[in-house]
Image: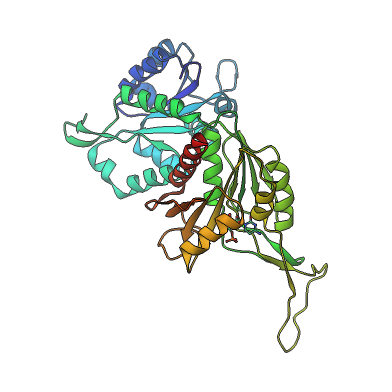
Length: 401
Ligand code: C5P
């Protein structure tokens, strides 16, 4: 973590006294540290202690009342390579999970584009409460790293799970992230994600249920591991968080093909994750089609470009291509056939027959088939962890080549 910029966020819990040691640990490992505190945190550990240890003035308020100087949460968010919130109280966790922004620590959280590490600390009953657990699960699902509370003696005199992880554990966790994290450095990745919309007339289209969550999780994973990512995205309700993700928003299969083919020219890895329409209306009407009084309506459809197959034909030596297969029947045979036909290095199969997998869900259950027929099955996991498995697999194949 030498030279990395880390924001340490301190919320108002008794474990804040341990955050002084955390700042010391991060500094010892070569990081630049800036501390943001909530107003209550100042009651638990003094700003002077934190400023002295971090070698930077601490920040609590949106501006300095003496001279009006603005503490910009946006520029803080841009400065940071990591944001660690330790201790994170039940109150702050609840606010983070719900987008509440009533102090500088929280506005910085909402603006941060870097990975966020959260070390909860509270009494055992608060920690076990379903509301708190739900908020922690939500933050985890959104890609925040939770450094789990530990069991042991608590300030209340009780004993149980709720102690903040030790400063050394937290520092090690972050260090591990930085060490592991950069194995895609210098690589360019092109990802297609989401559905396509095929225009029928100015108000109607043919679409599908793809949410884009898997493709966006892959984009975040690749960017966090140091890649420069071009994300060619159909219409979705998501926005990429990482600054190394360059999104190109498209609507139709044709637009997606054009953007993907251009980005593929310089890509080292191509991931075809989009749910592309196979057919598009032959005629796109400029005026709203009127309802006829009786009788059925015919819509002529023509095939779209198979982006994966087209890029497979243009594939360069050393380029890696990964496709997806969403199957309902004959899953394995279909997936393996597509891998061959589209010239992919491997195909990631997900099945609509698995509960909580595929469309719309935050979790997925995948099986990977390599070009040589090797099969790798994985458990149901959050899509961010699935993305990690896919990239780990891609790198293991690239290293073998
Ligand atoms: O639709 P199909 O099951 O053939 O999709 C398999 C793979 O091909 C996926 O990776 C998908 O993103 C890609 N594909 C594509 N363009 C299409 C259809 C599918 O890139 N028109």
